[in-house]
Image 1: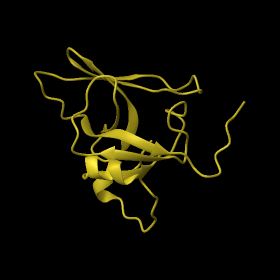
Image 2: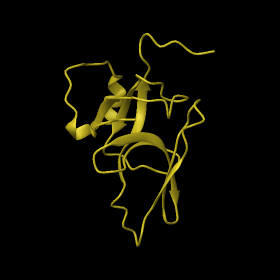
Image 3: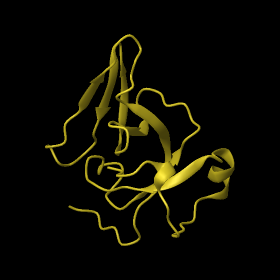
Image 4: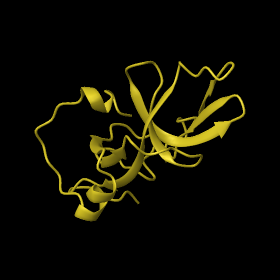
Length: 128
């Protein structure tokens, strides 16, 4: 879960990102993963590099704002009448969310960007 959209984040921390990735995705920004809804792919505390200029397609992992100010990171499934947000978690309490659109109006949900790279915390321990 990302609690604040990228355009409202202010940070002085830095993390190395491969130069080739930054050259390919110049509009990307790092966001810190908070929560366990995607912990099979992005463990809590990971830094996800999100490209805010990429087109998001079905199956991609994206940052999505669902209420205008809070964001979440999920797999995207495009439906005929909306979008389904799919978690990828070891916690079975995380369930998919379906956001329906009416007449192509999806104002209740905004896909902000695509996760294109990530780094796990230096002190990350794989749970067995």
